[in-house]
Length: 132
Image (tube, rainbow, N blue to C red; front, top):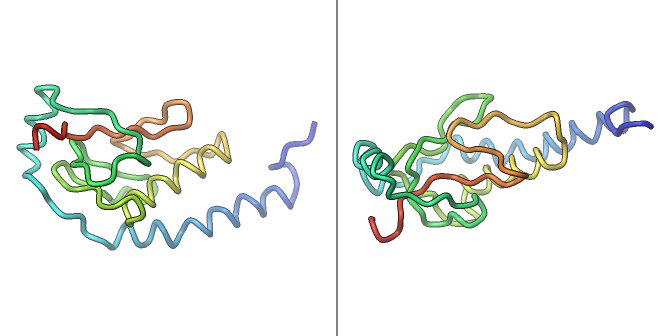
């Protein structure tokens, strides 16, 4: 059985999808999120368990409890205490784009410190809304 990665067409598809995601990644890495609380305060919430695991596509307007660092390049898109922004904003667009890529190309997944790939979804740890 031929894999889509065994042909020039398949490797071209992988390259084209990766290239189409690069603009979203660039914007996320050059836009500063709004800090809602200090990293120390966010850490206190994390230690106390005052967090929710929220899928990236549902995390608009939430406050990150942990830092989120896509690899490569290892540059943080969110630090603890920062607001995730709007659903179509640079940070969540970046995370949803990486999630889409990982689902389309198993075996070529991105490494993202602060997010775990759970059956194709990227849940992130956010401060509970009643603890903001």
